[in-house]
View 1 (tube, rainbow, N blue to C red):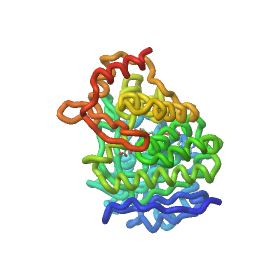
View 2: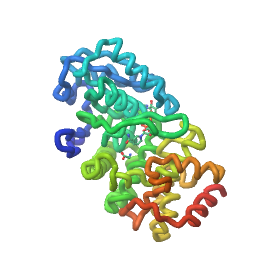
View 3: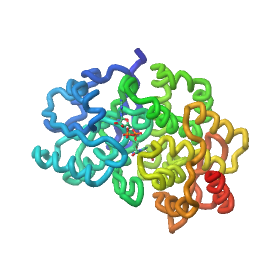
Length: 357
Ligand code: NAD
Ligand code: GLY
């Protein structure tokens, strides 16, 4: 068994641990230490609850647990679904000292975190992410929210969890396509801030696709370390944190134009990273390394056909937009990202045109 590891997200009084290991479910890690009151609401969905909900109850020993099961899918990441969580809290008479536990992928984590941010102006919550994407990205950093019909994640709040508990064994039941989508975000960290990690991924991708525990544990640990460091330096995305959105301006536009759920988030981000690398104008060899790694992971490296007008409209919804100006995360070189509103507009047009070929 790989050793259990703890990474701290250093945010002063809101600091919290990310605990990563195998066998943390079934009481392998005591969450009661992170719960103030006597009540917990476990939020999961119809896919994950039957697999893991019973198995986290021993981790919550000593607390009175109520549960809610949400419908599965990005299309349910809405205010209407969040309302169901709030209704459940009110019905169960939950007080300010309730702790809400998110058990599932990024959709469950984002909605649950937002419900926790809103209920009684903010209650405690715990993340137990069960997809690779949620383990390396969405459960860490406190971005919570839901989609608006006009755009992704347009409604939300920053609200940090008390603890993130990652049992890597939960990945054993994850469909291959979802595992690959998570790898897109793992590759993102290498591309934006760690060339050594990027090179490690080039060497170890097969082991990750084969779900070798030691490889998964290292990839999750390194991704969380990199994310924790960025978040600790810029919790509310006043500056550097935006680099975590590499490929996302294009990726979110793909998701928006196709309709949420057609391509997975990680798939859209993969194609978006290739487009962003092209817009960056980095060395051709580096662009090829990025595309090759994504391809090896079974991810798309080009966008689906989307009308040019729709591209601009959808990109305009991006939360990085300032003074009506698009801003992109670009690469100076592989392993070094920056955010800018000065980009070559003709080049952007040609990147978009190329995606329609
Ligand atoms: P998801 O939550 O939809 O999960 C993917 C699928 O896998 C779902 O069908 C789910 O039920 C299923 N599943 C989850 N765990 C499983 C398991 N262990 N075994 C079997 N099936 C399992 O998708 P996701 O990729 O985890 O998350 C995507 C969401 O995360 C998007 O809404 C995106 O906007 C959001 N996100 C948020 C942040 C953030 O910082 N908050 C960062 C990145 C992405
Ligand atoms: N996934 C982007 C962020 O957390 O900032």
